[in-house]
Amino acid sequence: MHIIQVIIEYLKMLISKRRLIHAISYEGILLVIIAIALSFIFDMPMDVTGTLGVFMAVVSVFWNMIFNHYFEKIEHKYNWERTIPVRILHAIGFEGGLLIATVPMIAYMLQMSVIDALILDIGLTLCILVYTFIFQWCYDHIEDKFFPDAKAASLH
Image (cartoon, rainbow, N blue to C red; front, side, top):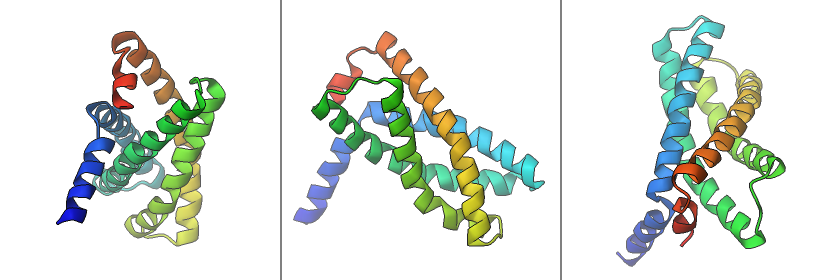
């Protein structure tokens, strides 16, 4: 029972309201973009591409919260400012880690080889890198303007 309590406390620490809002807004917008784009590109029904998008989003939401938790700790430790190079580093790290989990899902759902799924996922990742950068940049500015104390409060 003790180990379960430790895990629950750790999850409470990771999942702040701020991180949850961030992850859900990021994934919600991206889900719509991916479902429509894959349906159009592969001439597949939106229920297939949408389901794939939902599965990828669920994995990504958990990865997003964990990755951002540790990324922000590193930012805080080294007193990084959210400059363009830091945001580029963030986007590459986030998408690189996510790639490992999504290739098998793509291969299965779209009935393609792992190599084809890897190529597709790399293509998606390159597009999502741009999306991630734009989303994060906008999110930072919105948060700074409307919720200036939110970041500091979530680091404690």
